[in-house]
Image (spheres, rainbow, N blue to C red):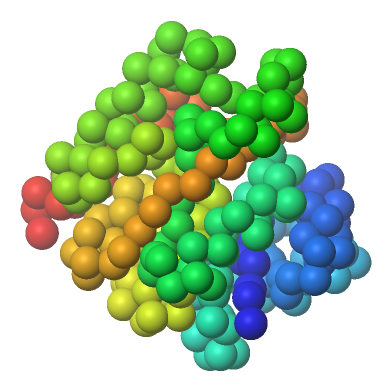
Length: 237
C-alpha cells in the first residue's frame, strides 16, 4: 500500500484540487492539517483525503512526522511527500516510488535539476518550470550553497537540496526520527538518510510555479536563517 502525505497550513484555495488529482490516480492521501485557521480540513476531505489535524500550527517537519507515524500505524509499505500548493505533478508519483517498489532504494528524492528525456520534451517551453538555467542568480547561489551544506553535514551529495517531493520505504520510516518541526526538516531528513545508511536515489521531477505557490514559499532570507538554525543545532548536539 502507498500513502501520499500532504502537509497543509491554510491551503483552502488549492487543497481540494491537489488532493483529488492524486486520489484520481488511485493513491491513498493523508492531509496533515497543521493548525489551519481556514477551511483546509473540509476542502481536503471534499477532495477525498483522510485528514488528521494538529491543534496548533507546529510546522512543516512536525506535519510530515505525523504523517510518517500514521503510515506506520496503518501498515503502508511506501509513503511519499507531496506539496499542498499545486507545484508538484501527481503524474510523477509513479516515478518517485518506482525505485522503492523495485527494491533499488530505501529513499527517493526528487530533483528539478535532473532532466529526463520526457521532461525535456514536455517542458521545453514552460517558463513557469524551474530549471537551473532560468533560476534567478540569488536563488541559484542559495541552491548551490544548500547543496554544498547538505554534502558537508550529511556526506550526501544531491543535485537539489530541499526538494519537497520524496518517498520512503516502510523500513526507512521505521528508522528516520526527525526532531526539527519547521522547514529545517528538509536538511535533517537527508542527515537521517546518511546516519542510517539508507540507500537513496534522486529522480527528475518538475516544479511548476504559480503566483499562489510563490506567495506560499519561504523568502531567500528565511531560507538562510533556516540553514543557520539547523547548523547550530548540529553543533550544539
